[in-house]
Amino acid sequence: MAELRQAIVGFGGMGGWHMENIRGKVPEIEAYGVYDIRPEAMEAARAKGFHTYDSLESLLADKTVDLVTIAVPNNFHKDIAIAALRAGKHVVCEKPVTLNAAELEEIIAARDEAGRVFSIHQNRRWDRDFCIVKAAKEQGLLGKVYMVESKVQGSRGSMYGWRGHKENGGGMLLDWGVHLLDQAMQLFDEKVVSVDAHLLSMYTPGVDDNIKLFIRFEGGCSYMMEMSTNCLINAPRWHVQGTEGTLQIDDWSCKGRLLKLKPNAEMKWDNDIVYTAAGPTRTMAPRPEYTMNELPLPDERPDWSDYYRNIAAVIAGREELIVKPEQALRVMKVIDLMFRAEAEGAGQKCEI
Image 1 (cartoon, rainbow, N blue to C red):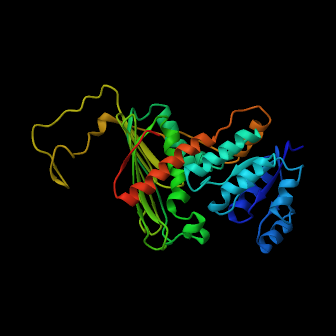
Image 2: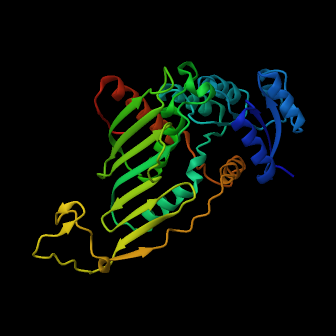
Image 3: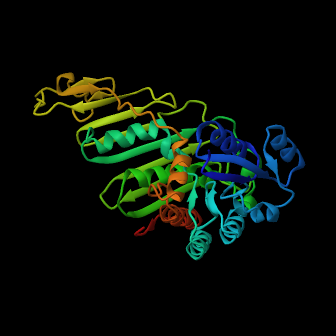
């Protein structure tokens, strides 16, 4: 028997994804109820066997509902989250949790007053490609990591639906940027000391749709993220350089390579100039193969459903929360600075 009963506000693409994944994979939670302002969404929910509510107020008044998931446009997150917490519900909110850090601080205050669990659906912490990179770093396979490139590239040319409207909190920084920044701050448990952002609006007037983000961590790592909507030839999903190795993941299928320096393998420099396809050069000549080993990528098999399993265990008092609002607050503070960096045309120093 399920430990918790859950209802969702917003039964669009992600709302349906939440409900179907809980129903099929998380027996601790009963995916029960739906509220959406669109009649066609309510009809679709009923067709799938979900209970439907005639208003948000009636959902929040249902004392049989323990957990509310919020999957509506970004500009509505704050008010619905606070209302649900004050109604005594535990709350999961889709990302980005809010439009800025100040709004999230309001939710955290409401959480503290209500004594309920509040979390953000940062599901891409369970992406296999990210988990491979994280495992390689934590296992020391690359030595000290000092440069990371993380890229997500599409080719349809614009943002879809409400994500293309500024008033809804649309744009790439708040859509995919919040995911890649969350991943970066999970890889490096240290302060962000500077940020910069190039936010281009190429095909979707009013919002950023092709962007580059830059952060530097206190330990020295330079970290670049790119998200594009009109890239016809994709770069690798990940390129990670460390003092002892380099890792590349090509795409979402997680094909890639990991090359590591052999211990105590001394590289000899030839006295004569080296001729390469780039012309005469010693600095950029390829490293001799005898100084390197190719290692298999870490065999990581994460499961997105573990997010909701953790939520159920936290509410039951069995586990610590994985995705904490305080972590999201750091990400939102960085995003605030990135919007400022774009507006001012200059990088921003910080300690976040």
